[in-house]
Image (cartoon, rainbow, N blue to C red; front, side):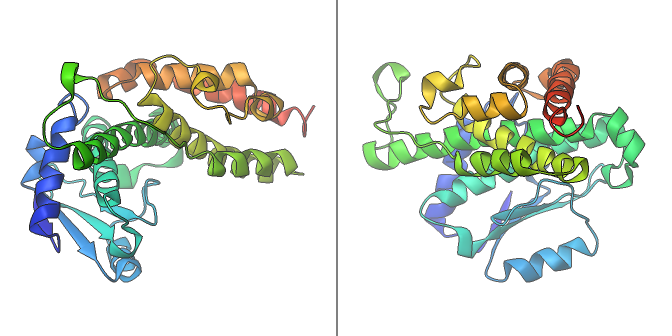
Amino acid sequence: MELFNFSADESRRIHRALTFIAKRELDFDPLSARTLVVKTDNYEDACQEAARYYPALGLESGNARLVFNSAKEGFHKILVNKAAIDGLSYLFTLVTELVHLGNLSRYNADHGNIYRLEAEKAIADHYYEFLLWSKFQAMKIATRVHALMAWHEVNGEASPEGGRYQFAQVAFPGEELDAALHTIRQAESIAVWREGFWELLEALSLYLGCLAFYQHEPRPAELDEQFPATLIEETVGLEHCLSLYAALLVAKDYPGWIAEKRNIRRAIVAMQEQGKQRLDP
């Protein structure tokens, strides 16, 4: 992996951070020599230039953009927004994109050029569920890496006794989830509701991905006192949401995603059907 515009200390931390990722989660060795990471001052311009040749895939953010080459031995690029970096957040951002890169590489090998996916084939190949799983998986892994690297920044290089890390305080990113829930609750048409529903699924995948670093069972309320159980029940059904979380937790790697993709879709469909009843009884 070639790093451009990163300091020697940042590069050292990046390579250390990768040691906290299991190989089954991200087999980066075949991709490393073909991946360039660029920290850029002109992020929006760089993204616009990349989009001329590599359209958006549904994984982009304001922090970084993966330029994925669908050719078998193609070269990839990750654009990191320098303006969005705060402290060690570049580690979180970069790990997120690397996980997406690994997942996309395997999906692309299984289903053909992802840039040529027609809508019907994307549905048949569970592409949209794949995007949600990749976001969940990337959030879980990036949360772990960032937390462990931050722990070592304070406590030194040596691992804790017994290998058990302890964290004094943990915050969960629930704002976007709350906003998405209120948006679909206020929708007055099926079209508006459907658009808001997929935004909710994305926010839910990211939120649950953060929780997944700290728990292995679908019990978010036991971990986050602010978990909006009542609002979820009123909008898409709490039981269906927890079924989605359970399936995402089981899908710990790409083969796991393949085994669970139908369960993920089943939970999403159940959430959609319950949620639409308010507008289409």
